[in-house]
Amino acid sequence: MKAKERHHLKQNEFAVTTARVLDTLSQHQRRVRTILLAVLAVVAVSAAVVYWRGREADRAGEQLGIALAMLDATIAPAPTIPGAKQAPGTFPTERARAEAALAAFQRVATEFSSTEAGLAARYHAAGELLSLGRASEAAQAFQEVVAEAGASSIYKPMARMGLAEAKAAAGQHDEAIKALTDLSAERDSALPVDGVLMQLARVCLKAGKPDDARAAFRRVVDEFPESVFAADAQQQLTGLN
Image (cartoon, rainbow, N blue to C red; front, side):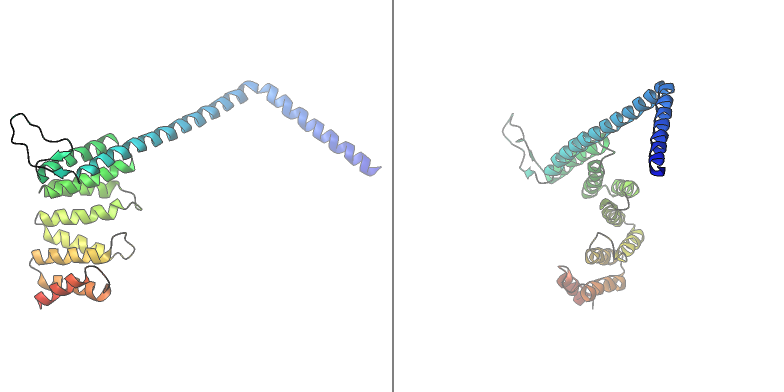
């Protein structure tokens, strides 16, 4: 009997609870509808943003690919026949090709500034500025990439390396040496330490610091005997001794 009564009690409790919920919903129907509509609106906007970002990333990647392809474009002398034009997809000189690639990278960086492809374009634009002998502009561009790249982005250490090279090209050897020394001490960096050491040694030689260059070359030989740079580093050491 007690079990039966408990069963009835539970049924009554459930019925009472259900009635209260239905009563609350009926009293606040408009408010509930408003909340639901707001939630649906947020979901719709989020989906639209995700879709737009995906499309934006696709377009950015496509334009970056076009710009990168310019770096391998054929160098063909300008036609000498009157009225003849440069063949499409070719450039008369390496400098003309570099300038065209620079302009293309800068367009991608500007139009798709919030995408990973835009960041990559800024990095490559800095590299083209350096190749064109515009070291100060290259240094500023590399610095912008360093500032904007996330901690896990490959472009942060690469831009730091580029910045050091730009500093060296501008004659700011001490700053370049410090930057490369810092990079060579980062064992968890995405950059190959042996490559950083080779660049450090070369900058030290340009700066008139043969002892520091010797130390960097020695590290390559001792710490990275299997490196593709090991033979070159050993040859440089032999010449310095």
